[in-house]
Image (cartoon, rainbow, N blue to C red):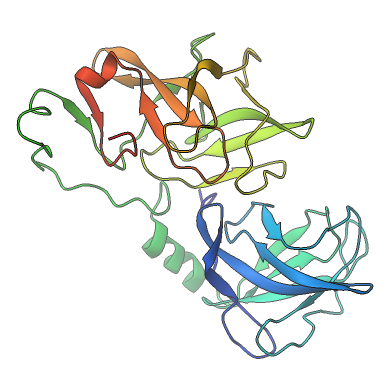
Length: 288
């Protein structure tokens, strides 16, 4: 239910917020920490989306290396006496603004982490108030809103509003791509294949994956999780950054529409084919 909850964290030593809104990861404010290992120091920006392992780092981070995490404000090392139950490395505690803490493993590549709430009832109430029961960050459009037009060019167009749930299907095998209220795809990056989960709500750009997808890099391939066929369209490029695009199908009116997604992490471009653009408009799409 809370796959896309964005956590606000602070330093357990000085209490200052660790959130950095200038450097985004997964299209949300990141968690900024300093890291040290051997004779190297640098900055790391972790995803604030719970369950995401994406990050941006300005120094190489070798797989399996244990690093020291340091607060960028008070410069104290953040560490606990607890050890990772998976690999034995020290756990790093970060405090939640709603009370409690998130602990992450200090070993690069280890995905062990967990949340502890001081008051579970109060924390769950806050999650419901902030994010609701379906998906985070959705600002639902008001009913009866007149279509946005320029002259009369959009008068006869159907407008798919921001926040609309998109029923999506594979264009090859026609099976639904929705799993547990998320849009699920298979993705290949640097020779590794994993699952990619996207918000199925139009213009809600939250994502998470089971493999690392570096910010601003293009995925090598995108597949249907059912039939395994590639969803890349060789005849079309992203209208914003020129990267390769993947094509899925979404339900609208009484037919399926070809719907294109940019494969570059962080690019929000999406669009329809030329024929559908005559009578369908995506609310706030970067294509218009």
